Length: 289
Length: 277
Image (cartoon, rainbow over all chains, first blue to last red; front, side, top):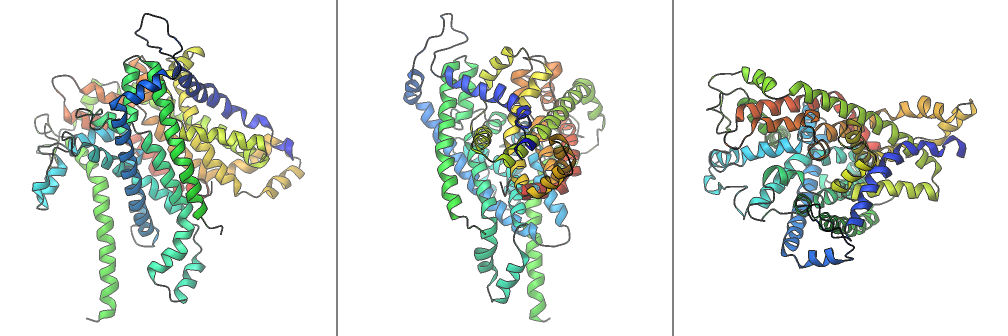
């Protein structure tokens, strides 16, 4: 049968993927070992692990790493929990279901640049909708300068990501819910299991793989976060929302390609080190059905 | 009146209440932008959720004359449509061979594609790579970038879906004398419809909404896509928020239409693609 699945089927995908994506990533890693700076007059030199040494001595790196980790954890947990609850609701049969299903995905199709601008309006300290809404429901004392106050900026940016991408997780989990056999739910009911028991012992076992995919995609996306920060705070106020993505962008713009290459390599390693064991651990809990 | 019927009704009301509140949170920001897109300059200076005193529909025609909307629309469509077609075709063919061959070498290829899900795309090195291929600053260049960055997730989706298509189907086609390309395009490709819809929307989204790649890879502003037109209305001293809002609506509209058309297939495509992958 081999000749019916020829290698040339893979070639059109491999050529742009290796020719650009992989080439750029490898080239970037290579740059990490040099002191290449576009604005420097002297030719670039091989500096070995020098960039990494500089990186680990830079207090901004530690800060960016912490912010990235907080962002990732907060968004991954909230998106998955909201998505699971909403997907369970949207899986029931009720009038208007298609409208609600369609609505939750709408933020996902909008450019993050646009979403960032919209939230700049919403988060305004004076007259922003978030503060207005808080006033309307009698919580006016909680009104804040959401993006300008160092205490809330990172949290506010994280909420934008949750707002925009929960719909994506909903779709993945809804897809998983389609694999739950109705007979098993019926059987559980007949055996007298309550709604929660049925969910825990039947439904959840079937959606577990899709929940896992949501978690993994959120972790990867979280550690790569860049667009939403760039469109709102650019890492500020001060460095209070600086993440790895914005740090790479800034050092790239500053011309130090070696340094930003080193940062990108560290980011890649962190994502790999965190997602692969998580994936293995999550997969072990999946029951073969 | 009787305790039995009250409980389900209350439950039903609570169910809808939760969904409606959540939907409002999701949709209100868009209503805000829509309302402000038809206000006058002064009224839109604080972007708030109030009914416009007077509807200024001419904001939209102003946006068309102030920014190159038609040009960027054309650029966006060109970039997105070509990228979507290439990604759908290339990823589905590659996934088919990878899943069916299922040997060490092909497993390695699959993992190679998965690396693309993890490794952050290196933008500045990519600029040098595009220069190396002599496609820097061209439509071909940015399309190649879109294709290469969108292939990993698409391969992941298609591979998951194709696993669920029984091999016996291929065998019967082969017995009927089908050659590889005929087998793929006549027998397998039509079966991929749900996952094609899903990946079309996702890839179209990524290209249409892109701003980072356009900024880095397109030095000529005349070749930019829709999201970047937003910068036409901002300056150091004054920003016409009403025009920004109108521009946002115009940017969202095309992608929203694509989404609504393909919407009912998305869950079906994810069902057998991402989830089983």
